[in-house]
Image 1: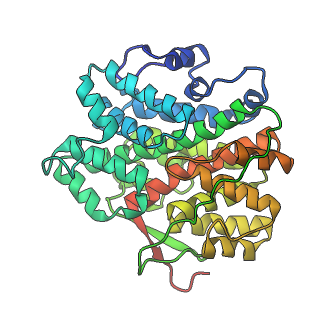
Image 2: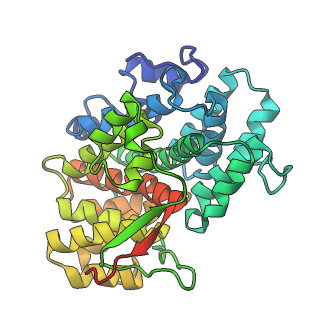
Length: 404
C-alpha cells in the first residue's frame, strides 16, 4: 500500500515520511535509519508479520479512508502528537513526534493549534468543562503518563465532552499505539546506532515498578477477570467489519475484545502484530518474551496483564519463584545474570520517556544475545506499552473466586 499522510494527501514535509514511501510504507524503518543490508534490517526481515502489522495498524488509525469511527483525523493526530511529545527519550522518539507534528500541519491546522497539541496547553484541567479538544488531550496525557490513574470517571468526562463510546475506544487505541511506537523506535534505534559490540557502560537505574493504590488487587500469578467501563459490542448487532475483527481476535466472546471491536480494523491489525511478536519462530525464547511482557506490566501497573503473562513466563521457563519475586518486589529483585539484563532493559524501555541506553544493550550482547533476540525483546516490551494502556484505561481487573 502506498503511504499517504493522515488527511488523505501524499506524505510530504518530512524526510522520514518521504523515505517511508520509498521503503514500502515502513514508517518504523524511516524513523530508525539503518542500512538495508545490515543486521537490524536482517532481524526485522525475520519478523515480517510484526513489520506489516505495525504499519497496517498505523494506517488503520490514521488513514481517513479506513476510519471506522467518527473521531476525526485531526483529533487522532492531536492525541498522537501529544503522546509522542511526552515520550521524548532520544533522537528516534523526537523524529516520531516530528512526524505527527508534520502530519497535523498537513491537515491545515494553525501553528498555535499544533503547539497546543504538543504541549497539552488545551488540556481539560486548563480548559472549559465539556470542551472536546481539551478532554481529548487530557485523556491522551493520562494514557501516556499515568495510565494506572485512570478510572471510569475519565470516560464520563469524555462522554460529557461529546465523545461516543466508539470514539473513546479509537482515542485510547491511538494513544496506546503511539506509546508502543515510541518504545519500538527507541529500542531499534539503539541497535541501529550501535551495530557492533558496544563498550560496556555504567548501568542506569532500574525502575522500581508501579506502586498500586491502597486496596487494589496486588500483582499475582492467580487468574483474574477484567470488567470494561464502556459497553462492549453486542455480536448480534456487529457489522461485517466488526465480526471479522472479532473473529481474528484470540477470544471473540471476551468483553475486552468485544469492546475493542468497536474499531475493528485496528483490532485486527493489533491482533496480527501481537501474534507476530510472541509466536515468531527462533530468536528470543517465548518464555523470555513473556518475561518482558510481565516486566512492562509490572512497571506500568497493569495487574491483569501481569497475571496472564507471569503465568506463561513461569510455566515456560519453569521459574515460578523468580517470577513471583518479580511480581512481589519489582524489576530490581535479582534473578541471575541473563534475566537481570533482560529485566533491566525491559523495565528501562517501559518508562515514559524510555531510558534504555547503550549500556543496557552492551550488557545483553555481552551475554551472547543475537540481533534477532534483542529485536524480539524490544518488540515484546514495546507491545505491552500498548496492551497495558488499553487494559488500564478501558476497564479494571476483578478476582475470580478460588482461582489459582
